[in-house]
Length: 130
Image 1 (cartoon, one colour):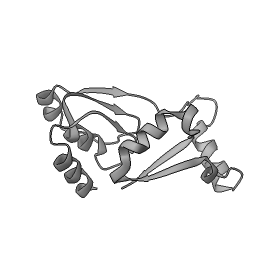
Image 2 (cartoon, helix red, strand yellow):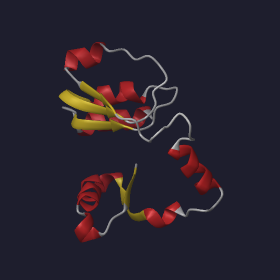
Image 3 (tube, one colour):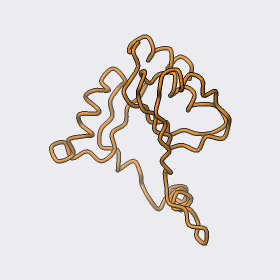
Image 4 (cartoon, one colour):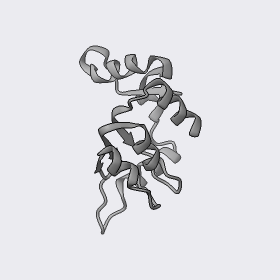
């Protein structure tokens, strides 16, 4: 939400090097990502944005935007994301077992270190809770 954007802008006033937007939807998380990335930074859009955004801030800050489709989609088959959701909703997959570590936002750096050292930490899915 808005308070999270304000928090990040206060804590990291120059912005972050990278922002991964994985929400998409009707609101504009992509616009928020452009707000919190540093000048010359990179925004990777994994979500499925469904609205227009104002590109003036992106141009002014010289932000790079990279699109990355978050799951495979084949025209003759159901998207694998849809299949995964069906398996989860029917209880055929217990995704909670995949969560190996959880960190509060204040320990985000420790969370990223844990996630990036899989051989040492044996992490599968690291959750950061705001």
